[in-house]
Every structure is written in C-alpha cells, then in structure tokens.
Amino acid sequence: MLLRLCSHGLLLICCLLSLGRSDTEEKCSTFTDLNIHNSIIGTDLNVKFILHTRENPTCGKHLNSTSFHDLNVTRRTVFITHGYRPTGSPPVWIEDIVGRLLSIQDFNVILVDWNRGATTLVYHNAAAKTRNVAENLIHVIDNMLDQGSSLNNIYLIGVSLGAHISGFVGKNYNGSIGRITGLDPAGPLFNGKPQEERLHYSDAQFVDVVHSDIDALGYRESLGHIDFYPNGGTDQPGCPKTILSGTEYFKCDHQRSVFLYMASLTQSCDIDTFPCENYRDYRIGKCTDCKEFLPLPCPVLGYYVDKWKDYLVKKSPPMTKAFFDTAAKDPFCIFHYHLDFITWSSKIRRGYITIKLVSSQGDITESKLDQDAATFEQYKEVSLLAKFDKDFDSVSKAFVTFTTGTVIGPKTKLRVLRMRLRPLKNRNRPILCRYDFVLLENIEMEFLPVPCDDTNL
Image (cartoon, rainbow, N blue to C red; front, top):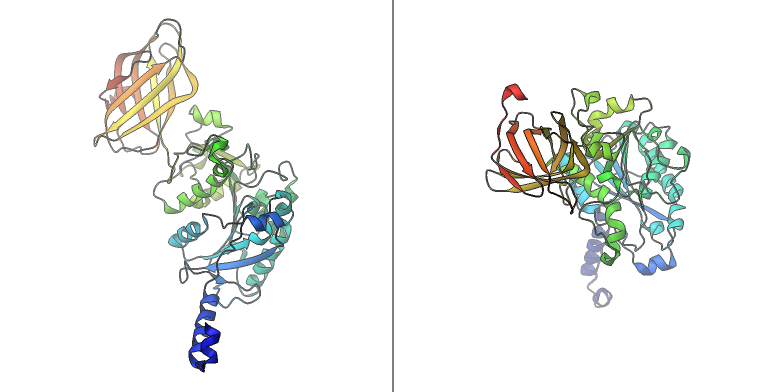
C-alpha cells in the first residue's frame, strides 16, 4: 500500500509514514519471541541488551554494546539474565520483574536477551553457550566502566543457567561486582562442578541464592553467602503434583524462585527465613532465635537481604543456609508462632497437633504441625512451630486437635496444664494461653484464648 501511494506522487506522506514507523522501531525493543519450530532446528547465539528505566518502563531501548547514549552510567544497573528456553517463548515474568524493580528505585534495568541460543530442544546446547553469553555481558560492563560506571553499582540477577552466567561474569572481575542473586541455579551439567565452572560466593561482594527445585532442575548444594531453601527446596505449594498438568509440572517448582524474589520487591509482607542446619530442624522450631544477627531479626528472602550482608560475609566459611515455608500464592508469606505445651499425663504421649485460629472479623487460618510426632512428657514444656498463611491482629477463638496418627487401639487423652501461643515476630501482641484442660484424640476442642498470666510466661 505504501509503495502504491508513493507511485501516485504522494511522496511527502510516504516519507512521513516511513519515518514514523522507523521511530517506533527504534524506540521500543522487545524480547525475542520464538516458537517450537526454532527449538527443533536450533538457534545460533545472538545476545541482545534491552534497557528499561523509569523514563521508559514499558518500552525497552536496544542498548548498543559500545554506545550508551540512553544509559546513565551513574545509576545502579541491574542485569537480568534468563535461562534455558525449550519452547522459545519469552519468560512470563519478564515484564513484571522490570516493573517491580523500577517501582523501588530508579535503576537501569537491562534484560540480557539470549533467547537466540537458549531456544533448543537440546539442553546441552544451551548450557554450552553460557560462557559466550557471559563474554557478551562482560563487553557491555567494560564499556560502562570506561564511561564512569562502578562495579559496586552492578547487580546481576540470574535465573537457572543465567545464575551461572552471572557467576562467570563475576569471576572476570575477581568478585568485585556489587551483588549477584541466583534464582534456582541450573543443576544439570553443573552439579558437583568445581567453583570455576559454576556460580560461587566469591564471584561478587555479596551472593544470595534461592533453591526451589533441588530434586530436579535446580542446584542442590550451597553456592552463595546465603542460600535460601523455600519449603526445603523441593515441592512448592500450589505447584502441580502429577505429570497430567503438562509443562507446569516440570517448570513450576523451578520458576517459583523468581516469583518469590518478585514478591520481596513489593514488601506487602516480609518472607521471613531461618538459618538452620537442615529443613527438619527449622520445621520443629529449633532455629527461630537468630541471635547471631542481633539487633537485626532473622533474614528476609529477596531483594532486601543485603541488609544482613555484613553479618553473612564475615562468617567462616561465609556460607549460610536458611529454610522457611511459604504459602501457595503471591505474596507467599507465612506467619510463625510458637505453640507451647506443658502436660501432666503420667504416661508419655506422642502425637500431632492442629490449631485453627479465628479472627475478630471471622477470618480463619489453620496450621497442621505434622512435621514429626511431638513427644509430651509430664511437666516438661514442648515448643512447636506453628505456621499460618494469615496474620490476625486479634484472635477471638482457637480450635485445637490432638491425634496420634493411629487408627487402631484405644483413644488417647492429652492432659494439658498450659497451652501458650506466642507470635514469633510481632512481639507487641499479647501472648495467649489456656490452662488445665484435656484434649481427646481426634476431637476438635474450641477455646476462648486469654492473655497469659504474667507469672506463668
């Protein structure tokens, strides 16, 4: 149509239309969008850098690796590097993570788009290109440094293979880059490799890592100054449990690390974590004091964990594992309470506790403390860790159930001198108690909790 207009002498209109189209193409650069056909035939590596700032949050600008006329090098710069793309489509989280980062600070957010290279049915082919992607990124950073940028202001966020790419970049600068965040670093072909061939805590001044799929696509062992293991690092709540769910079954756990990190950017609630030797010790409440970080509380997951940097990098060795549970949906936060029992049954009782809280407004939240059977001995206090997906300013009712988990034999009674519910984080809230009652096995008991007698805390 445009050619026909030109042929009829409408040269001015033709030129204006062409110029307008050219301007649009220059102003907006989009993430490479491929398909399964590209995966089958494979793609040659072609790395593209797309810049977003608060001036252009939704319309990316193509960043020339040698000319940075759109880039303010004095700003803190965040590079986001994706991983393997078996179907060629852009990551579903790309636009969201850019928007959330720009909502908290005036960053340069640069997408490292290596979809042409990551798109292939053969994972090994994509993994083999990670060093070349890192070289492209190093070239950009070198030019930024020449124009006045600082390594302190460089922050690399790498997803899956992108985490190891970030590590390769960090090694090039002898660990002087400000920070690297690894979001479920890829495990296949990297598990067990020496530190020169994968992400390592020495690759930046501060390295934090989230492991959400250690039994499949992710890396199992510690890699950073602090390594987070949501829900133990394996099955994430809300993700499909069977292969009948299709591709979501394979990628949901792996991607959860990204969505947890993005949730931390909104600060609608903190995702509290607990440094611990293992997941079991966290779940039975052995790791809740975080005394080593005083006056700070326990570390939080995500962007703001750098507040704990000084504590973490000084450890010897500077490696901390942190465990926590999450809810199934954004913002994923869990609220922790201690549930303490002093019992007076003459015989030892072993069993499980479920507690359900009702707010003054009638909302309900429940915690099933089923990680291990608790052992209740006469006059000895047992402290259990209860985890709720809602946090109530006030509790109007509580429902408690005791079970031994057996289906045969006589029903057991648990005689309780005192049951106490203590919020782990909001210490200004009242500690609630109930005194002198009997829990009948598998019978839900309703209580009106009362503030504890100060002499019995």
